[in-house]
Image 1 (tube, rainbow, N blue to C red):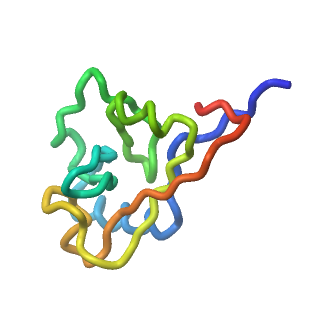
Image 2: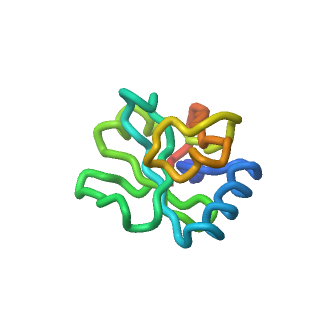
Length: 119
């Protein structure tokens, strides 16, 4: 039996609504799953092209028409999961992410992908 392909990253309806709001305010956007430390591995939202994507960053997919990246080293820990981008109340984890000033922040939930081929 061939493996079922599934999206590596998806967004909830609430996250998609916040993405639409931010796109109306800032234009095209991009996301990068931060690696930890200060922001606790949160999805960071930037104007498209503001963050320089490195050769070790992996494009996981798109949410709300926006590219979503993760560093390859971090991907090794997450590659068997589907990232679910959602929204929680409260300020964003970083002043650099566009979601901070809106009183809501993007968060990452995940679920294990068993017997599924990411892609």
